[in-house]
Length: 279
Image 1 (cartoon, rainbow, N blue to C red):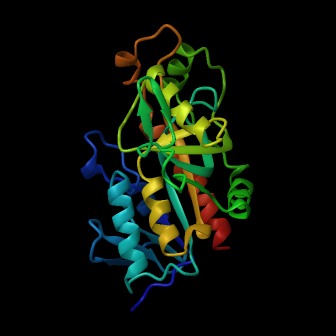
Image 2 (image 1 turned 90 degrees about the vertical axis):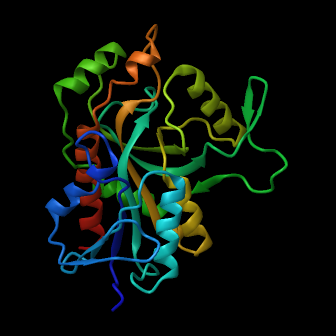
């Protein structure tokens, strides 16, 4: 029997895919009464469904290829009907320090693919002989609705995040905001690469970016090909900064992360958006 959810959430990783104890999947299982579990061809993880909530949880795996494969398998198959569902990525990300702080949650209005680009010497920009830009503008009405549902969500904070912020001269507290997310299959950290990301965004006419992550361009590509992109929104919480503090060493600051805080706040906001969409 085909599932007909009102909302499908795409977290990336389980505890089994990460060397720490963090998981983007398990906290959802604690918050909703999932009463069905099924295996779908082409998907590495079980799919969970909460009938009363109208919610399907579909873990994608880490990276663009895993995300695109999972989403395509669902869109092409008969197990889960996506045509009338709102489709959400909810997870963690790196954060541009100028855009926000650790624990902050961003609703993406745009996705940029970091991997498809042209490098000549020290310059980085769009691949100029390709017709298409690898940028996806997301549904403005859906972004606005997600932001409205998230505005009053109380966000968590902790001492580790506050200690890390001090090294960045950052006195902010976690908040909800909107901005571009940049997706790539590499984890980068440091001013040198961040400047190249800035240059790529500028070549697309994107003034700045808020978050960096590893799945959303794959998800957006798959959804666009199945005519589902207008139903998609991405919610990402900052679990680390994407560069070192001023005068710092990126080989040291790369370990300054708060994955648990990021996951908690991403799911607090994600749940508020899910509940609004299924009310």
